Length: 341
Ligand SMILES: [Zn+2]
Image (cartoon, rainbow, N blue to C red; front, top):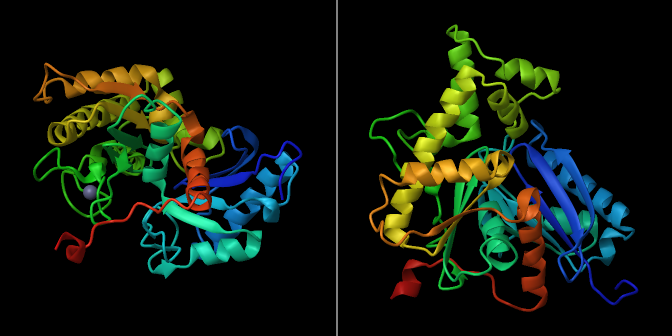
C-alpha cells in the first residue's frame, strides 16, 4: 500500500544494548512516526523480538499506518548478523543471546512485511555516509561510542566488511596487558571507553570506597544502568570518578581511532553512538586532540565530525536496508577464502 502522496513507507529499528528505537520513514527519509522502548534485560531472543514488534507497531500507529503496509522493516542488530539467513548469533550486549536466532523470520511473521537485518554499527555508518555527516566523502570510519565501541568502514564508496568481522575498532589494543575487556581479552579500547566496561569499573571503584554520584543519579532517573544521560549529568556535576573514567575513555578513543586512521587513511571519521551523540561536539574535539600524538600522517588530517543524524542514525540506517532490498541492490557481501582464489 502507498500513502496518498504516493510515497512508499519503510520501517527502521535500531536494536541497542539499552534501548530499541523504531521509526517509520517516507521515501525522503522523513520520520513520520517513532517509538522508543528499553531493551529487555531478560527473556532471551524471544523477549527482544516481542519488544521489537511492539515498538514497530507503536511507530506505525504514530504514523497512521499498518505494519503490513510497509515496504519492509530493517533492523540494525548487535552480534553476528547473517543478512541472507536472517539470523543473529552471539549478541553479547543482549540478554541470554548465546546461540543463533531467526530474528528476520520472527519479525516478518509478526509484522506482516519483510524484515531485513544488518549489523547495527555498519547500518549507522551507512546512514551517516548516505544521509548524514559523511555525505561529502568517499571513505569514512564510523565510530559508535556506546555500550561497546563499534566501527563501520566505508572505502571507495562501499561498505568494507572484510570476511564479516571488519570494523571491530573497540578491540584495537590501546594497552598491552591492560584492563580486561568485556570480550575477555586485555587492553582493548572498549575496556576503557565502552559504557558497559566503564560502568563495571565505576561499580568496583565505588565498592572500594571511591565516592561518586553516578549510581545515585541512575536511581533518581529510575534507571538500572549507567545510561549516556546519567554519564552526562555526572559530568555536569563534575563528579570526580565520572570525570576520571571519561578522561580515560577519551584517551583510549584517541589512541585507537588514530591507529585505525594510520592503517586506513580515510577522508572522514564520524563519531556517533549513544555516548558520542549525548556528549556531542565538545567531546569530538577532545577525541581529536587525544588523537594528535598518534596520527602518523599529521600533515593531512581526516575531518573528525560528530554524527549528523543524532540518535536516529541507527534506525535511519536500518530503514536504508529496506530501500536497498526493494531497489534490488545486493547486500554487501563479506569476503570468503574461496572468493579470493
Ligand atoms: Zn575486547
